[in-house]
Amino acid sequence: MEIDFLSPAEKQILLTLARESLECGVKTGKLPELDLHSIPPRLCEHGASFVTLTINAELRGCVGALQAYQPLVQDVREHTVAAALQDPRFPPVQISELNGIRIEVSRLTDPVELKYSSAEDLLTRLRPHIDGVILRDGFRRATFLPQVWSKIPDVADFLDNLCYKMGAEPALWRHRLLTVQIYQVEEFCE
Image 1 (cartoon, rainbow, N blue to C red):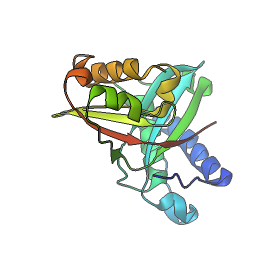
Image 2 (cartoon, rainbow, N blue to C red; image 1 turned 90 degrees about the vertical axis):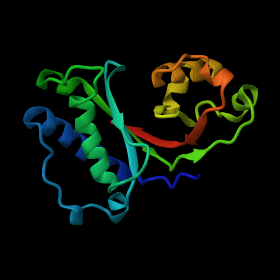
Image 3 (cartoon, rainbow, N blue to C red; image 1 turned 180 degrees about the horizontal axis):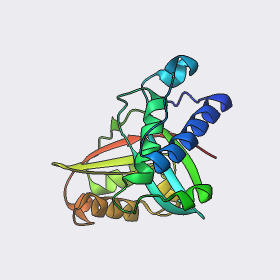
Image 4 (cartoon, rainbow, N blue to C red; image 1 turned 180 degrees about the vertical axis):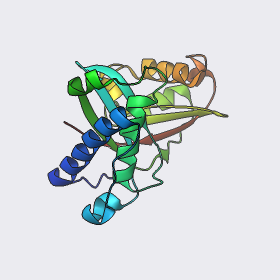
C-alpha cells in the first residue's frame, strides 16, 4: 500500500484544474471543458480522491470516492464541484465566497481490509495520522481521512465518532466485529 507520489508539477496541475472547476461550477453549475490529451498521462490513470474546501480553516465542503473509477484528473474536478455544491452538510458555495476558499486534494491508495480479533486488537492495529479508516456494518458505511486524526487523536474516540458518522451507536465497534478497511492519502493544497 505504498503511495507513488505525484510530482510537484502534477500536483499543481490538479490544483489549478480544481480551482478552475470550483469557479466554473459555482458560477455556471457545470465543469469547464477538458482535453485529456493535454494532461500528463499519470493524471489520466484511474485514481480516487477527496476534495476538501475550507474558509478560514473551517470546513466548507468535502466530497470524494473511496475507489478509483475514472481518471484522477476527472475525479478531482468532479469532487471539487460536488464539495462546493452538493455536500449535504452545507448550503452551496456562493460566488462571494470563492476568493476565501482553500482547496485541499487527498489522493487515496486502494483500501485494504484490516483483520482484527477484538476491540482491543483493533486499537493496536490502527495507525493514527497515517491510516484513513472505513467502517462497515451491513449497509452502513463511513470513513475518516487520515487528516481527521489531528482533530480526534485518541483511537477509541476516533472509532466512536466514525460509528456515529455511520449512523450507529458510537460504541458499536467495542461490541461487534465490523468490517474495517484502511488506506493512506497523499495530501496537497493551494
